[in-house]
Image (cartoon, rainbow, N blue to C red):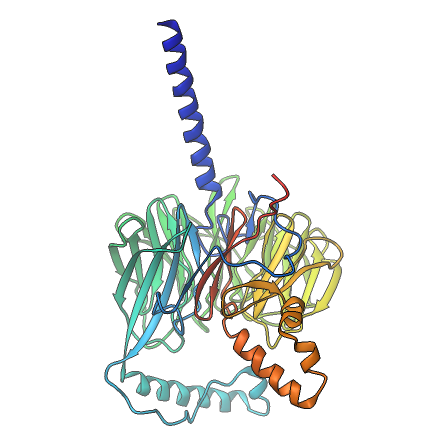
Length: 496
């Protein structure tokens, strides 16, 4: 009897310990919103990751192509998120209502900044009006739908898909989902907030957010705190997570749409929400009441704020604004330093311990968190990198644009991988691919250079989708590709 009792107690103790460990593992495994659990871009529970790719590269754990996810390609730039045993992907897709004839070339195509040279502000404003009208006219021949895919984290198999009838926006709606307490929250096109059950894929509620709408695209992702889902939609809105009812609104002067995602600051006197809003203004509000605590003219734009210990990092769209660091307090925060060596329209930096890593234009730089002093800067061999954000795990920083760059989170620049993804989803260093394909030998002649260019275009037509950022959790990286989504195991098998 005593032995049986001891065995029963031992079994119960073991089961309890396993349950606790499973719970801890589930929490550590989540990259449940844009830029991870703390919205910092850092996986703080990462296992040891490989320092270099093997010569032949690595195959994806799984790769789901556009054949199986029809709305995964040409459907916006939302980044994947990981919650529990699932990976979630949001897309905004257009489809012709009827078989339409080939449309004539655009009279007013999108002009990147470098093609606006010589245009006055008034001329560019008039051009944008004409472009907007032309695009809206063309859109009448299409229908627009949103899809939320739920994939099994282990094998990529589709668990469910939530389809929602949507509306036209100038650029595809692309905010990443947020998964908290069994619900997925997403800002849909047309100023509509939605909650979806993560187990069934059923829509739980939809809420129309007040404000004018024509064709605006708003890319903010929800921050969830104390039963409120908070998002930037011109102004800041807090919705009850159970009902979708709007609890409070903070109005801002909407001089220009900003797509920043809010972050939660756990201050000594209560939770605060911090967000960049229109006009280079950053505000801090009380989470429960939505009342203003402080505001600063930071010059920050679409990049998400970063909270690192008692520091607040904000990133601007011009070199004049640059990267600015504030010391957080309950009154207006004190500006500590400003680094003007980089700027970007939407890329968010990452802070690892005492260092901050920032990408802008083709520059990649490292500065001290305490002083803003530059430790190193390098130029990226990439064509117009922008919007894609840096992430970190195991003292390594990753940047997925065209391929995947990894380097040490250290005071000296040391690249660990400069990888590409080929059409089969294999991740390998570009130099190894070139050797495997014989590119260096081909490029020794003029005819060979032409052939090499054709081979490279064919082989590498499915890399990371620009403007998206991977999720990284427990040593696995989930990358949205141009034609699907893939999972890579980056764990170092030689270390426990």
